[in-house]
Length: 483
Image (cartoon, rainbow, N blue to C red; front, top):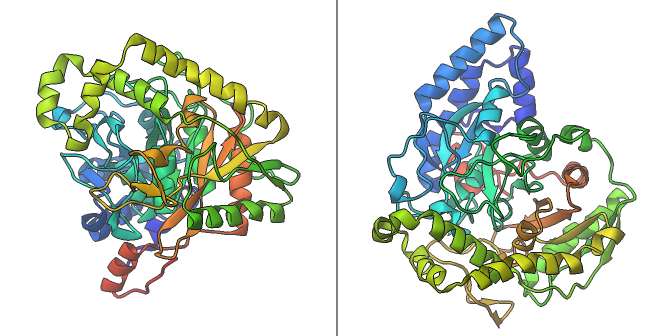
């Protein structure tokens, strides 16, 4: 039977460890056992560190026995996305170029989680260098959606989303350069937040994505994500964009009722199509904020599509970063990414400059919305999870669309750097999750945590178990559950 420890929130697990009701080794072993149960079905964890995790758990137990001061996540297991450097643990970036790469230092997000007492149990799957919004690469293959394994998790933090969805630790690190936290959160039915740029420090290795990529958490509960942000945010001298810590904790923001907040519900950003069922589910979720005392107003926004501009920036940065190993990379590159490299050769300095200018033009149009409203609500993604082996549909709501056009609701907020989150909004008729995106004013993650936490309390989602977990539990003799 599936161990209930692996389904505890990070907050509850940390509390029970401090009260000596659960030992750190029990928490680690429960999550490792969950990897054994479900990972062959979802391919979420691509590198395991069982012995290192157990050693860390033993040290955590000693700290408790010696009555040492412990961090807020003492003994809590977490997974790290395989683009986040982990000292002494293989970090591949989803690329054969780095198949055997073992760094000797931790990315700041990993470093700070460890400092708070959290224990690394494994690395999660991603796309190659995060270049496509799916968890798929030539090294490890596709991550499969826990709600329907014929479909992808989305990405590039797809392994992270699948891991927390399946009970493989309550916390997972993610990064988001064009929706890479919010897309898999939406597709897997979990919570994910892309904080303000610089809120969590970033040290890029290899280079690339610096001007659009945000670091953040994927979790089953909003409060866990708030605590995650509390322990990982703050200035870092290695990152010139890193921000000072907030004056009030994000965890405390979860306790603030959102009554009186003015919310703009925008089903379409500009002329971007949305599948009708997705729109219906998201609008129903948006209107539920009225039950929480918010004022919700539908808004039509005639905004440009920034997807091409974001791709110009990301491709130029990634291609430049790999320039010295270009010939080697071309031999091992994941096929769907191969066609991106010639694009970087065609782009000129004017294309890159105009792409950056497009950010300012977009904000000139969008900024006034946040003078009137406290947050903007949109579908996170206009579709549900695409099948594995696919880059997405050729049409949305019957309209032909270019490849990856379904990123169009996420990308703008990487370009504007403001915080955005995805909350589970419901399921479509086939049982696949749908996410509602909450977009906050610049530097105002607190309002998003207040809104998301209140929504979660009124319409809880974390108890739902996806079919892959139900199947594993049933095989162990336990009960099954679903959406």
